[in-house]
Length: 150
Image (cartoon, rainbow, N blue to C red):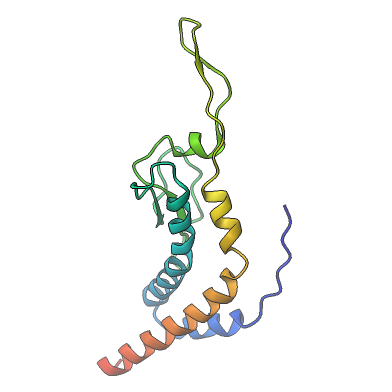
């Protein structure tokens, strides 16, 4: 899948973040990204078959065995994923025909998308929203630092 983006204004955001200490800039980016990804998690939770469960959340921790994102002082990685539901991917993508060790057929699970449709519904306005949210977080952080005299 190829996506063409025309992004404007992020160079200025990068310069504004560079004026902050690295840990503060990372916190600003995490807060903005978390806020932009929350609608994806909310919609995926609404599509989850057990509607009472709060399965999907925005997080940065990756479980063992999953591909590890790049690490670094200035890299911020967040994702929307299932928490405490190891079977979520089986429901999202479905399974083929399954047989027990004895050879008995135990069924198949039809795919029931949750994260895919949630991402597709929210991704188009996410970059503009992220830019606006980053500027908002930068302004709030600068105001807090000015009030503290830093």
